[in-house]
Image (cartoon, rainbow, N blue to C red; front, side):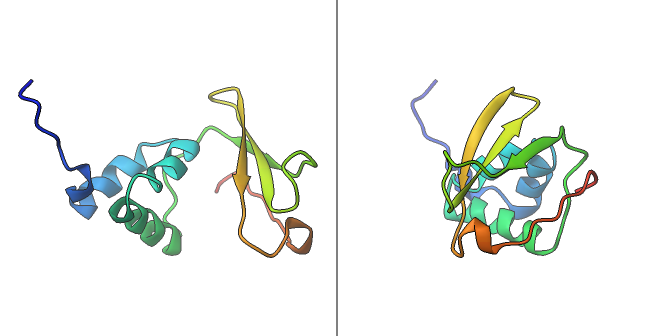
Length: 102
């Protein structure tokens, strides 16, 4: 290795979208936190209702431990629980609808 650093934020949007299509749900959410360029590609896909490939299901649930401004998510793939913060309004003021097909 020559010690150089790669600027992953410079990946072309179309290439990044192809990579995102291969990610599981939790990894896709994590990818949006890498940098502003990745967050933009993630947000654009989400706003267009682009659904990635079939995902291993996750269970989204309310829990007192997460509080009113977060939800719990259990990943069947990783067998791990996550707490996902939500913007206002509190979860008690929201309507949730689920689907087995995204």
